[in-house]
Image 1 (tube, rainbow, N blue to C red):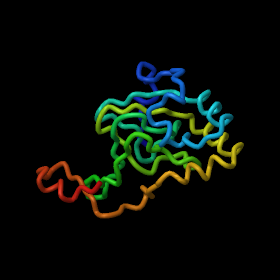
Image 2: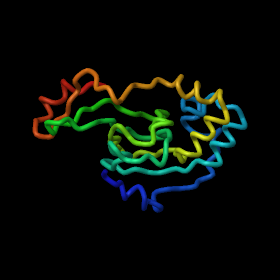
Image 3: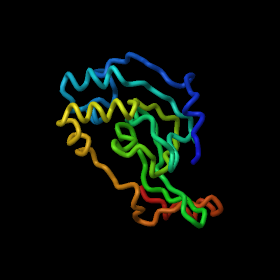
Image 4: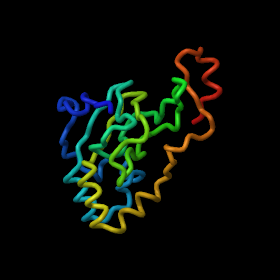
Length: 173
């Protein structure tokens, strides 16, 4: 299993900012958009912010997931490597999109920052505990459009060995 050590030792990029959730630029589109005040307080207590530089992995396939969270800014790509070495792009994440799957402690895809990305993150164990304590929060998580990233769709491929002109028409957003 690959260890994502830059995530484990990233204190210079992680912030326990006390940014007010009500002033968050994605507040009305993110998972927390329909939280009750007590749920929002619980999320606020456990959140941290993390900056990922362009090209930096947010998570790798097979990696134990320590955090789930929401993109506050930036763009990330979800992908997986194919047996023949090509990379299949499964989707693009934009601000307010959720990263991670509660109940699934191991990542089944790669997520890489395509631009600088800021994430509002929650320790997965604490987030799952909140989901169990607040039954109404789980269904609201599922109301967000979720794509089954474990099932490749549309045959969208990126192959580093091919010129961009050949790759771009096959890249689906």
